[in-house]
Image 1 (tube, helix red, strand yellow):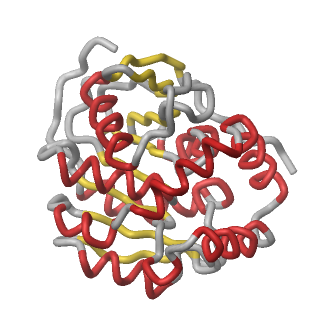
Image 2 (cartoon, one colour; image 1 turned 45 degrees about the horizontal axis):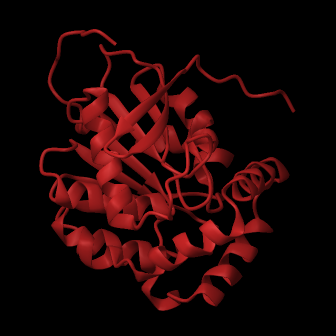
Length: 263
């Protein structure tokens, strides 16, 4: 298999309040912006294939949130609302105007918190493989679903995820998981007024179809999209297919023309 090529993304560190976020971005200010928000334990690394697929038409930014990937660790594991405020702060610090904000897994919970609490933050949002299914809101049930998904992911995806999990460390992961399980995305999404798209891989055992459909129906303006044959980490296993499927939604969310500015 040929190695994937990734776009040339510039890496920057942003101070957002008392936290630091690491950003890999195209900084192409003439294109409509997209911000990519990772899930629990991982980093923006698993978004690089999707960033490549989007970079021809969008100004793409993949975040490493505080305590994840290469971003410095805060003194404790941050809650979902706190991470939502960090995402909103990163959008402001980057000077982005009405981006589409894309979350994956627990990143969907973070995105929903950011969108509902910060009016005008984005022109739309995409939730890929959203957690936590209200019918499986225990650590044991989530672990079982994660194990089932691991058996459906290719080795390169599992290797990337395990690397990031080890970098985060088991204690911080478990403390973050408690925050994740306490969060109620199905209630919070009712406050997300921009247009939304809920996406799942058709073979995703973590974000099951009935759960994804429930979220789309709870939102003021959202619809459901499935990627055939894809597991939970569809943004890494099938980035081109995901980008193509989301393209009409991204085009509809595109803000009006804006002048190119300094990066």
